[in-house]
Length: 168
Image (cartoon, rainbow, N blue to C red; front, side):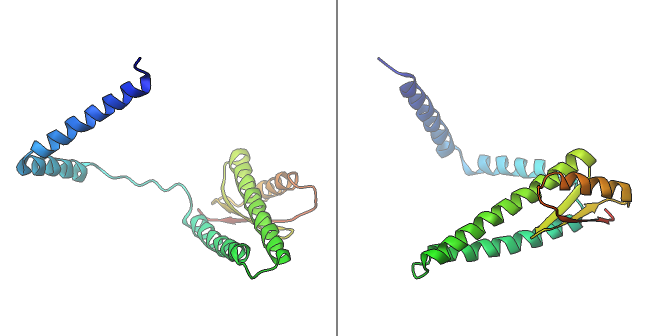
Protein backbone atom coordinates (compact mmCIF):
# COMPACT_ATOMS: atom_id res chain seq x y z
CA UNK A 1 0.00 0.00 0.00
CA UNK A 2 1.37 3.42 -0.95
CA UNK A 3 0.84 6.13 1.64
CA UNK A 4 0.62 9.90 1.11
CA UNK A 5 4.08 10.54 2.49
CA UNK A 6 5.68 8.28 -0.12
CA UNK A 7 3.73 9.93 -2.93
CA UNK A 8 4.82 13.41 -1.79
CA UNK A 9 8.43 12.28 -1.52
CA UNK A 10 8.43 10.82 -5.03
CA UNK A 11 6.69 13.91 -6.43
CA UNK A 12 9.10 16.38 -4.87
CA UNK A 13 12.12 14.26 -5.75
CA UNK A 14 10.94 14.11 -9.37
CA UNK A 15 10.47 17.85 -9.48
CA UNK A 16 13.95 18.48 -8.10
CA UNK A 17 15.41 16.02 -10.56
CA UNK A 18 13.71 17.67 -13.54
CA UNK A 19 14.80 21.16 -12.46
CA UNK A 20 18.38 20.07 -11.89
CA UNK A 21 18.55 18.41 -15.34
CA UNK A 22 17.11 21.58 -16.89
CA UNK A 23 19.70 23.72 -15.09
CA UNK A 24 22.60 21.46 -16.12
CA UNK A 25 21.55 21.39 -19.79
CA UNK A 26 20.98 25.15 -19.90
CA UNK A 27 23.81 26.89 -21.71
CA UNK A 28 25.61 29.89 -20.22
CA UNK A 29 24.20 32.46 -22.65
CA UNK A 30 20.61 31.53 -21.80
CA UNK A 31 21.37 31.75 -18.11
CA UNK A 32 23.02 35.15 -18.59
CA UNK A 33 19.96 36.41 -20.52
CA UNK A 34 17.67 35.32 -17.70
CA UNK A 35 19.84 37.11 -15.12
CA UNK A 36 19.99 40.28 -17.23
CA UNK A 37 16.21 40.33 -17.64
CA UNK A 38 15.81 39.91 -13.90
CA UNK A 39 18.22 42.77 -13.14
CA UNK A 40 16.48 45.08 -15.63
CA UNK A 41 13.10 44.39 -14.08
CA UNK A 42 14.50 45.20 -10.62
CA UNK A 43 16.13 48.43 -11.81
CA UNK A 44 12.99 49.70 -13.52
CA UNK A 45 10.71 48.96 -10.57
CA UNK A 46 9.98 52.13 -8.56
CA UNK A 47 11.15 52.04 -4.98
CA UNK A 48 9.12 53.81 -2.34
CA UNK A 49 10.04 54.12 1.29
CA UNK A 50 7.35 54.98 3.77
CA UNK A 51 8.53 55.80 7.28
CA UNK A 52 5.75 55.59 9.82
CA UNK A 53 7.53 56.35 13.06
CA UNK A 54 9.40 59.42 14.12
CA UNK A 55 13.16 59.08 13.89
CA UNK A 56 13.34 60.34 17.48
CA UNK A 57 11.27 57.39 18.70
CA UNK A 58 13.38 54.96 16.70
CA UNK A 59 16.62 56.36 18.13
CA UNK A 60 15.22 56.18 21.67
CA UNK A 61 14.18 52.57 21.11
CA UNK A 62 17.58 51.63 19.73
CA UNK A 63 19.36 53.18 22.72
CA UNK A 64 17.05 51.43 25.17
CA UNK A 65 17.36 48.09 23.36
CA UNK A 66 21.14 48.31 23.43
CA UNK A 67 21.22 48.97 27.16
CA UNK A 68 18.71 46.17 27.85
CA UNK A 69 20.73 43.72 25.73
CA UNK A 70 23.89 44.66 27.58
CA UNK A 71 22.18 44.06 30.93
CA UNK A 72 20.78 40.74 29.74
CA UNK A 73 24.21 39.62 28.56
CA UNK A 74 25.67 40.48 31.96
CA UNK A 75 23.00 38.50 33.77
CA UNK A 76 23.35 35.57 31.38
CA UNK A 77 27.11 35.48 31.86
CA UNK A 78 26.54 35.31 35.63
CA UNK A 79 24.07 32.45 35.14
CA UNK A 80 26.51 30.51 32.96
CA UNK A 81 29.57 31.13 35.14
CA UNK A 82 30.43 28.02 37.13
CA UNK A 83 32.38 30.00 39.74
CA UNK A 84 29.35 32.00 40.87
CA UNK A 85 27.38 30.97 43.92
CA UNK A 86 23.79 29.84 43.72
CA UNK A 87 22.69 33.04 45.45
CA UNK A 88 24.38 35.19 42.79
CA UNK A 89 22.82 33.07 40.06
CA UNK A 90 19.42 33.36 41.71
CA UNK A 91 19.74 37.16 41.91
CA UNK A 92 20.80 37.29 38.25
CA UNK A 93 17.82 35.12 37.26
CA UNK A 94 15.40 37.32 39.22
CA UNK A 95 16.90 40.44 37.64
CA UNK A 96 16.51 38.90 34.19
CA UNK A 97 12.86 38.10 34.91
CA UNK A 98 12.19 41.64 36.15
CA UNK A 99 13.88 43.02 33.04
CA UNK A 100 11.58 40.91 30.87
CA UNK A 101 8.54 42.04 32.89
CA UNK A 102 9.58 45.69 32.54
CA UNK A 103 9.91 45.27 28.76
CA UNK A 104 6.47 43.64 28.58
CA UNK A 105 4.93 46.50 30.59
CA UNK A 106 6.54 49.07 28.28
CA UNK A 107 5.12 47.33 25.22
CA UNK A 108 1.69 47.07 26.85
CA UNK A 109 1.67 50.83 27.55
CA UNK A 110 2.79 51.66 24.01
CA UNK A 111 0.02 49.46 22.63
CA UNK A 112 -2.55 51.11 24.91
CA UNK A 113 -1.50 54.59 23.76
CA UNK A 114 -1.60 53.51 20.11
CA UNK A 115 -5.05 51.91 20.38
CA UNK A 116 -6.74 54.45 22.66
CA UNK A 117 -5.13 57.72 21.59
CA UNK A 118 -3.65 56.90 18.12
CA UNK A 119 -0.17 58.21 18.97
CA UNK A 120 3.20 56.64 18.34
CA UNK A 121 5.09 56.59 21.61
CA UNK A 122 8.20 55.49 23.44
CA UNK A 123 7.88 54.26 27.03
CA UNK A 124 10.68 53.79 29.55
CA UNK A 125 10.08 52.35 33.01
CA UNK A 126 12.65 52.82 35.75
CA UNK A 127 11.61 51.77 39.26
CA UNK A 128 8.37 53.71 39.98
CA UNK A 129 8.93 56.26 37.20
CA UNK A 130 7.32 55.90 33.78
CA UNK A 131 8.53 58.28 31.08
CA UNK A 132 6.43 58.54 27.93
CA UNK A 133 7.52 60.36 24.77
CA UNK A 134 4.75 61.04 22.24
CA UNK A 135 5.50 61.88 18.61
CA UNK A 136 2.99 64.63 17.89
CA UNK A 137 2.97 68.23 16.72
CA UNK A 138 -0.09 68.88 18.90
CA UNK A 139 0.94 69.51 22.52
CA UNK A 140 -2.29 69.02 24.45
CA UNK A 141 -2.32 68.89 28.26
CA UNK A 142 -5.78 67.28 28.31
CA UNK A 143 -4.53 64.39 26.19
CA UNK A 144 -1.45 64.10 28.44
CA UNK A 145 -3.65 63.90 31.54
CA UNK A 146 -5.86 61.25 29.91
CA UNK A 147 -2.77 59.22 28.98
CA UNK A 148 -1.46 59.47 32.55
CA UNK A 149 -4.80 58.28 33.96
CA UNK A 150 -5.04 55.40 31.50
CA UNK A 151 -1.51 54.23 32.25
CA UNK A 152 -1.99 54.50 36.02
CA UNK A 153 -5.05 52.24 35.77
CA UNK A 154 -2.73 49.43 34.60
CA UNK A 155 -0.82 49.41 37.90
CA UNK A 156 -1.87 48.74 41.49
CA UNK A 157 0.85 50.91 43.02
CA UNK A 158 1.09 54.66 42.48
CA UNK A 159 3.55 55.52 39.67
CA UNK A 160 5.24 58.78 38.78
CA UNK A 161 4.27 59.24 35.12
CA UNK A 162 5.58 61.94 32.79
CA UNK A 163 4.35 62.62 29.26
CA UNK A 164 6.53 64.58 26.87
CA UNK A 165 5.42 65.64 23.39
CA UNK A 166 8.04 65.81 20.64
CA UNK A 167 7.46 67.18 17.17
CA UNK A 168 6.95 64.34 14.72
